Length: 84
Image (cartoon, rainbow, N blue to C red; front, side, top):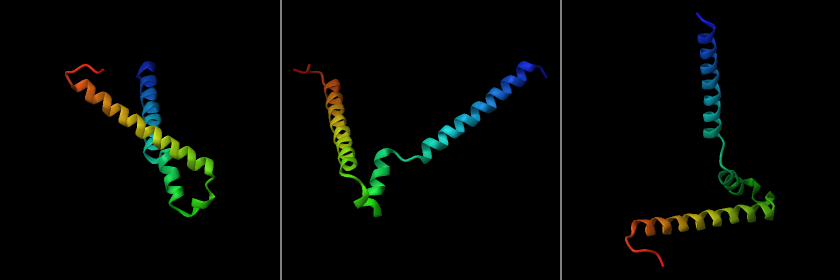
């Protein structure tokens, strides 16, 4: 077996291991919103600081606002009339 083939196999196996690890991390790690929602719904409701609650609330409002803007953009893009 040539050295190039050995290195190629080692690189492929290493890439698979790293890819599997990244996929496993993405599937098992909750988003920040899910993490704080779980904390708020549990025993730690009173232990979260008001700053954390406000930050999560602000992020949720911004996300909803951006989704509404995106829907408006999609409607305008689908219509034949130019926007004014």
